[in-house]
Amino acid sequence: MNWWGYCCNALLPPRNLTIPPMNYPNLIQQALDYHDRHSHTSTDLETHAIYDPQRNRYQLLRLGWQGSDRTFACVAYVTIEDGKIWIHRDFTEPGIAHQLLEQGIPKTDIVLAFHAPALRPYTDFAIG
Image 1 (cartoon, rainbow, N blue to C red):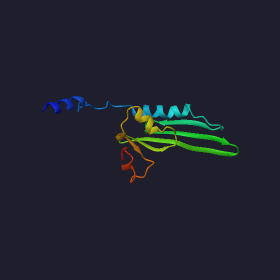
Image 2: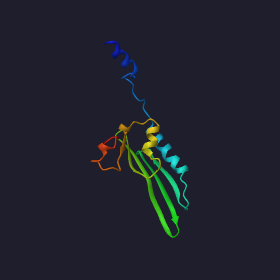
Image 3: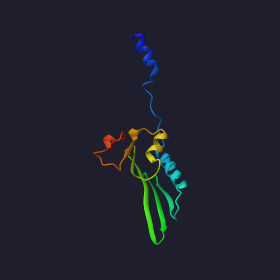
Image 4: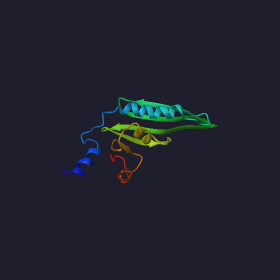
């Protein structure tokens, strides 16, 4: 190897680095808990975080009354399937995917399932 190749390779991270196993259920719960605690609405709606870690299903609901109208809405729905996090619905800000990326989960482990399978290759996230 010449001098230039040696210097350039010295700047690169080692190739055998692996991301340590993460506790995806806890990270999903933390993201949903954040939205459960910080949901500020001017109405009488309540936010409920629902977890089913045995089946790897996580949901954030908003429910209550707005005048004489009953509201029952799924704000976010996330599952873990085949080692990947599938975000089926996400009406949160800044978004659950963004929060999980900040926690160190790679895009290759997050599927934006609310996009049609034909569109997923264009998202920079996992296809499925």
